[in-house]
Length: 292
Image 1 (cartoon, rainbow, N blue to C red):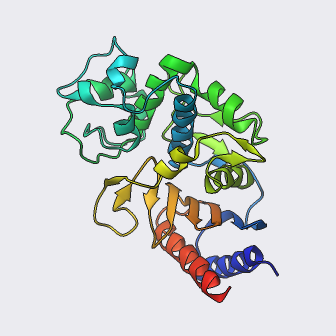
Image 2 (spheres, rainbow, N blue to C red):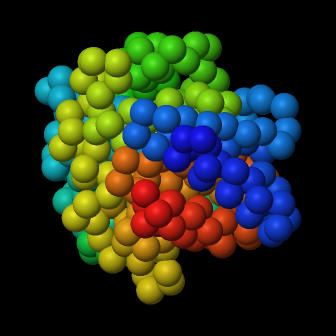
């Protein structure tokens, strides 16, 4: 039995014991992989894991010289009205949730205003403080689209097609832009390919799709986001923890968990059990590492 298979079996047992409403699981450790399904394979919304994929879009554009993470967003969107202090907000601030602009989530967030990005940028900033909002990623992708065109099409050509993922569907705003902070539909196995790309620092089957430094920046040198375990540190879409790990974490238990040469992908429909399950997965990985 490979290490990946052993970890998979222990996670399956943990799901059974906890009652976590898991849909799919994929484990990759070194070159070994293993998977398990509780429900038939189907594309489902990966929620905030999509924020990490939007970071990859911006990183590819930066590699191509189309944008700079540290250029003011106002340079991309010169006809947008700006709130107090927003002229200094950059793409990096938007993607690390450190713009200080407050626009809380709601079920109708995408349709409450004629243009969510315009509404976001016209609000004042409290400075470089953590303020989590789907509108922040949406606005970042609105800025990116000013340089590269439709971000969904851009990702299809430069990320999804090289990963062998076809006909990707995004939920779109009334303006026709990808929702960005969520609304991306992928299967567990498709999401696992993104996870492996990230684990391997942007390299896929011999091709460097994203520069390694951008992958590192997804979980290094982030901002202080709070004091709750697993939510105290946020970088470019990546949360620090549990423990030595870091993760992309979507609502209802969509998880990409990274620890050393392991990446665990989970899809689920269990918002409130996800933190405990993430901690359990990391404990299983740590234990497997000690046994090796």
